[in-house]
Image (tube, rainbow, N blue to C red; front, side):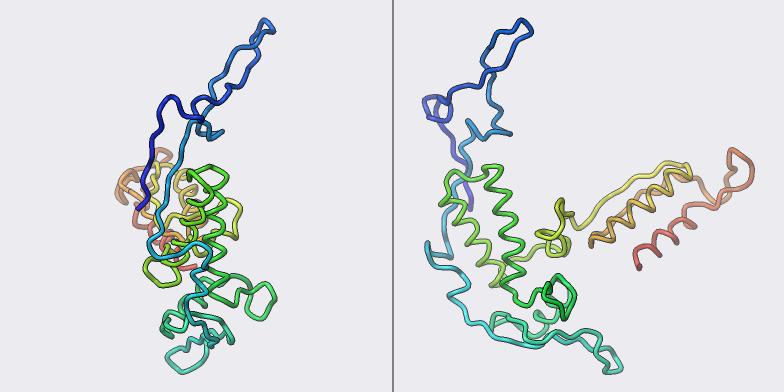
Length: 246
C-alpha cells in the first residue's frame, strides 16, 4: 500500500530558494512556491514493491500466446473476429474475446489496430505514469517505477481492472473521460432539457453511463406558461433512453 511521508522544516524541499515576484513599485519580494504547481515542499508518495522486482518486467515472467478472438451471434454468424492477438497464456477465451473486441483501439485490419494485451495495458499504464511524473506524485523515480510495474502486474494477472471508459479513452483522448457514471441535473425549461440530452449523448459516446433527477420537470397534467399542457418527464425519458442505445 502507498504511504504518505512527511518532512521536517529543515528539509531541502522547505529550504528551496523562494521565487521572486514584482511589486507595483517595481521592487521584488519573495513569493511562496505553490506545491500544487511546482512540487516544491511536496515530498510525494513512496511505493513498496510486493509482486515485482527491480529490473524485471512483469511481462517477462509470464507465458504469452497467439489466439483468435471471435464472437458469434445466436445464428452462428461471426459478429467480431481478430486473429493472431497476443494474450497471456493463462487468460480464458472469454476474457480474450471481451478485451480484444471492446478495448483494443484502431480499426481491425489496419496497422493502427492494437494486437496485443501488452499494447493495451501499456497504453493505459504509461499514460497514468506520465501524469504522475508531471505532477510529482511520487517521492523518487524508483517509487514511480515501482508503481508502474506493480500496476502492470495487477492488470495483466487480472488482480484488478479499470472501468470501461479508462480502457476506451486513456492514451487515446487528450483529456480522457475516465468515470463510469455521472449524475446530472435538469431545470424545468426546454433549453435545459435539450442541454441534458446533449450532455448525456456525449457521456455515452465515451463509454460512460448517466443518471438524472427529473423531479424538477412538471408533470403531464400541468399547465405550461405559454399555454397548453406539459408532456411530462416520462416523454423526455423515452428520448434519453433512446440516446443510450445509439
